[in-house]
Length: 233
Length: 233
DNA sequence: CAATATTTGTGACAATTATCACATTCCGAT
DNA sequence: ATCGGAATGTGATAATTGTCACAAATATTG
Image 1 (tube, rainbow over the protein chains, first blue to last red):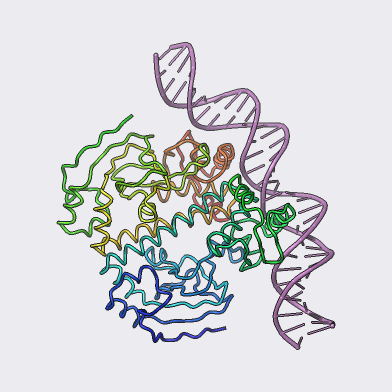
Image 2 (cartoon, rainbow over the protein chains, first blue to last red):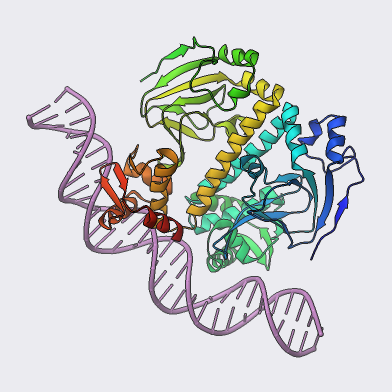
């Protein structure tokens, strides 16, 4: 399952999926990026980036959905977050120590863009506004992640499952009706509970009329109650 | 308990506690910082910054030790990390949304420096190298925090207490013998367990000869075993 | 140096959730 | 359509840890 890497033809100027940060670059800088980047496609399920690997290129998710995760002791997987399109993957790892701390795998077919790490770094150093945008994006990401973790650790299992449903509804898909992009096991890995427990709580929510559930399709029926459960924990 | 705010006399040039980031500023920029900053002293126990407050000044911890924490539902406190000297407090909050997400309180007498937020931001935008240093420091902070949380959530209580002891020994004090800077309750708040459980595990470690424990003073006797417990979870 | 408040230690018990073992259902490939 | 494997659901049980109530020890303050 090797995916093709295709040298980009476009100049970034007309890229529909350009990042907020790249939007503040001038024409010359944008061309530098264009001539040092490559586009690539990945199928659902493929690993985009592996924890522990060294970073030679920044990866920017142009389209699609991915999971950010780590593996504990070979087996147990912990999902940090779901990454939406228009996001750079693993920026803190790049600036922190150049070793990727998290793995990324495609939850949908994805289009990504590889950008040479040295060029990226020199842009940060020469364009403070670009750096500022990167800073804003990594800061928000950090706050969101830590926020999620902090609240999770205060919550019992019902609150956690409610959180996960609300996360998909409000942050990822922005609708009350959606299909989970992965298995029960992965849902459990996202909120840090066992698969069996996650299953049980989902079914409980269904039987109480809080959600509608058919396989991986979820419809939120009683949003208020779900939010209440999320908060009461 | 109001602490004095004293207009700085020094010019940052000769500041012994200058940050890594400020070290890359040129003389003119450093003077801009100097003329827009104030030094202040806080006693042990005092709150440096309160979650929810708006940011008008960056706070830089020149000397001392502080805890970064949030309060859940008024009562329960969760400590994110212990902050050592030579650290900017709450940078992700500043760049994220300008609202402070975490509180900070002094665990020792502290010397801090207030820097005007607008001046700080303009330095980021005009000096990419400064921005880069800030990026490195926030990235490392983020990786460390998330790393700690991720591993914690995989661990049982023995592993967590071991982690806390190793955290103080290796990261905070860099010695095998140290005094905890706070109560058992706060230790419990740091690792997300109940006070009683934390106490019990500490005493267990003592009775098994892994650590020596007198009040808040801890000596690590069997480092290997402690590390093993930390890993096995 | 009392007197009082705070912190720490302890045991019994209850609540929560993981684990295990297995049944059932779903889904893709032939 | 059928077969086989993966994903999901289910019950029983055990392990873990929080909670409560209180005792002991340690600090703090007038």
